Image (cartoon, rainbow, N blue to C red; front, side):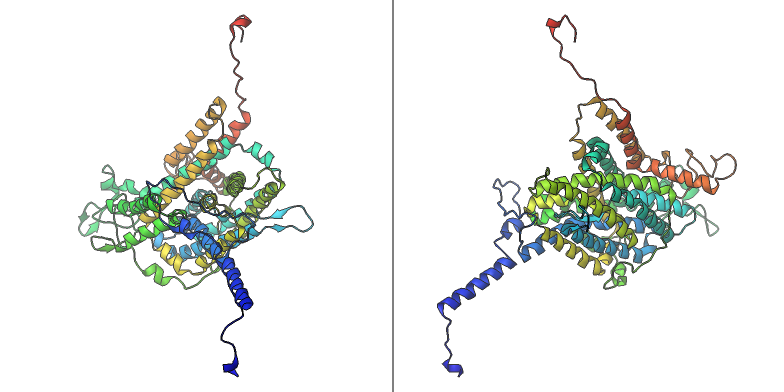
Length: 598
């Protein structure tokens, strides 16, 4: 009978119940100090925070793993969305940036999904049956779409489009070429890391990484000013040519002059059209202000933000800039329109869009250089991961992680291209997250991958990203791209900069690379003027005789892609000089007791 049951539990049962509850709570939450992670920072405070350290194989509580994974995902999102967004919006676009809206949204979602999937595989690590080799690092080491391939994709696709290919055809050819070139890194993964280090010392690798950042930072400033296309066509507003290419007057109802591009006209000026309904000339203060809002929030987060906020500073600053541009108006016009969000599908996945695979020979050499650079960069990133995770970099486990990480990079880049995405590589910025949060557990890496997959599948998020004004994206990418330069600076600082030999290598390779970043048309074609570069003209006023045939055009395009991509030409020069320059002379002390002989 119900009333005959005792209304209390025995002492032993109550103790067992409390113990079970305690075990569940430890598994879910643990004893982690979330206050140290989430409380804001006082800029003038002198106290240091103490946080529990989790090693790579520690049993991380579920909630802590979810929160840590979210931090790593947020630290990656800004870098993941930029390369596919830029390629689809500014290179693949057939009729201006808005013509590839669906492709932009798809490419962003695909990048997030593939990066999440590859990160999970990389963190788990698998032994290759019947061999001593492994796939994956077995560390909290994340994979994402690489910045290093962005300038190559941009240059090659624009060159192919000038030759008559559609944007989708050109992108498909780059995917096929990437799949072939990815085998270089797969092969290099079985080489001893010491031999790779000797082939690519810090002075060479640092030059490559710095020039990746330098070239892209210039691109970021173009977005900030209103858009990269209108930046490169802003010469039409020059007073000396304005009467020839602008719309200064109308004669008998007919506009005189060549139509400015893009964005049409605003008061008779060449304008930018990638910022919602706001149509202004490149460098207008309205665009500069929107981009600067991102920079302001980055500074505020560094001053007052908690460790969690600092790890997610890029996404926080980007969302703040998006909010500011969403509420701001310029002469009554909106910077953000809802069309992109409304048109985005609720969910998506890889292979929703297809591209005709092909092969583009002129891009092979630049892509091989890119894979060489990412190979050495990955070794450096994994060394930093081991240091941040307080693991031994002289152990056999480290050598196995390097081999597995390089193999993972190569195979995942091949898989990304097969799944219509851009090549992947190890993300170095997440080592800073490990250092700040004191969490090196692989469980956090797996949760990071799951977060990225979720963000990619929910394609309304891609709709939000694709609706951001170019000037806001520019404020963020300028910071991100320059961060790449700073990473390269850190690599170069490990070399002996007092060495005359190293200084010569650095000065020549950086001089040419930075020069090309500043003045790319010293070798290459200007926008909307394909084949006319005086360095190697194929058509136009500087070409003597008939136009180039198809064979000469292919050779020309390959060489010009190499010469106009800053880190390609800079890395080739650094490798060449490192191979041929003699070592520095040994400086011997002078003594008066040896008869004046040194």
